[in-house]
Amino acid sequence: MSGKISREQVDVLFGFKWNMGQDYSGEWLDDKTLVITIHDPFGASPPEIGFIVGQVSNSGSLNPS
Image (cartoon, rainbow, N blue to C red; front, side, top):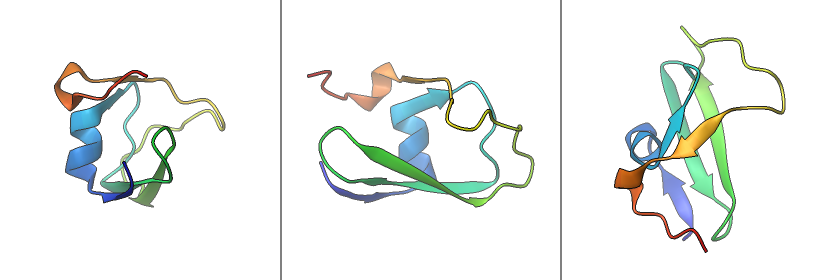
């Protein structure tokens, strides 16, 4: 998996326990590394730096290997 994904695609793949703001996107660097960039943090909950709790959504159909 590689390439950029939209906020909507991030939301399908993952669920986070805090609000990440109005606009964000992701970019797969390799098969196991997704970097999420927040473009508009308006309304975001203050995160703990380096510690974000989230989970893979069943609807995302990601392979756990």
